[in-house]
Length: 401
Image 1 (tube, rainbow, N blue to C red):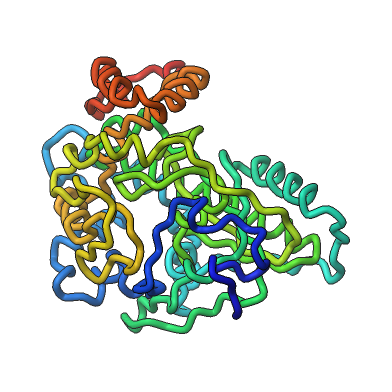
Image 2: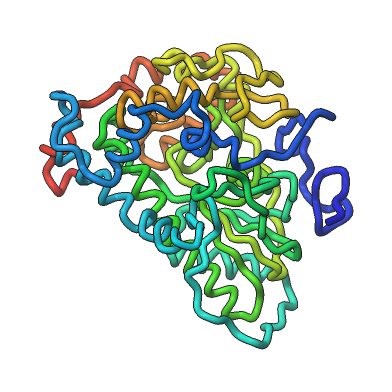
């Protein structure tokens, strides 16, 4: 597949380029092999795999009656967390006997046959608006569209059965990627770290599966090709940035004007003619340069405190991009020891606050301005990011949820 200097496979200069998105890509850039993702390495790499790792994964299959006698790690906490993951896990396990783990290692395929004739699209701009409206109808909180950039597609997929790489089978005729985001529950995330808080992550993935499958089926019903993809097939964050949904933060997460970093990302690859969005900048990089909340709050110190760089911690990092890079091995080791995922960096991030929309819009604007240090101080005064005990969430009345 041919591409121009910006990685675009569908145009010759009209697309948003790397500079617009804030990307610093060097001559050492190499596409990423999914086999080297930290979660996949935990199956084949003996330096990552351990009995604790096995217990970590087992806890998502069989809720633990007792692990730690600490609030947030009771059987009910594991039970609700795993229930949140249920829909995503169902699709992941649906075709495991065919060596497919859909949504995490392979794209989703639970579709009916689409239309044999294509709908005529006279206006890619109008079609893009229709797609966004449809995506939101199906549950998406945010939607953006970018061109198909092959650089972010994995060189190979990973086979859980063979514990080795396998051929990337994504069709090569796609022109666009529709990126959708689902909000994660703020109150659950205030209880991080806990098994209870992991429910927010599971629900996000389960909602992703439903929205992406419906959106791809809609496009197929118009007579076009569409592939729905969650954490599989390609890197989500670069595509989301190119689709105009947000910026990259120090903690390695997407930060959006509407939801901050409190979201899960999915995507649909398609050849449906669509207008593309452009990256938006609202001062995240400048704010993160003076803020160290995620670095200070990270127990294993997996988040860098210095400037963006080309540093490579281990094989789970992509090479040739100047950015803030998280040490995936340290991060995952903490997850394993907690027997649940961790989102402390998300909880403490000043962009993750549950204020009224108008106040958050004002805050975000000021956080991107010359008074960003004052806004950081104000967030601390307002008590932003402090952990709440899981029992607080369980005891809340329904009308307070």
